[in-house]
Length: 124
Image (cartoon, rainbow, N blue to C red; front, top):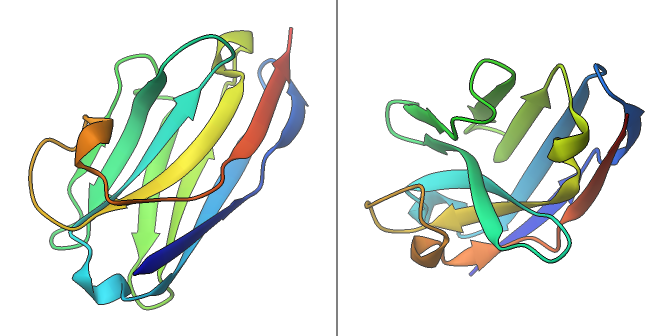
């Protein structure tokens, strides 16, 4: 089992920056990759970014590429999401997720563990 807890959400203005963190505990060595997803009211949970523990390859959704940066600290079992130039459309609950097996990191269906989420609200 892997437990995930997100932190760092809040209310900011458009153009501001915010840094989300995800702390993993439990059998973290068994995970292949970590991802961030977000879900706005009335919408599906969408892929934001992902990182593999082996090699540190990163992947981004087109809507955040160039503005968001995902990073991981294997020793501390943490994954962060630095969000710059925030827009009102970035408003959502952000979830951290871990997947055990290799595969498409952009699909939420392949992730095995999820955090409870943290709210990010960007006012325009």
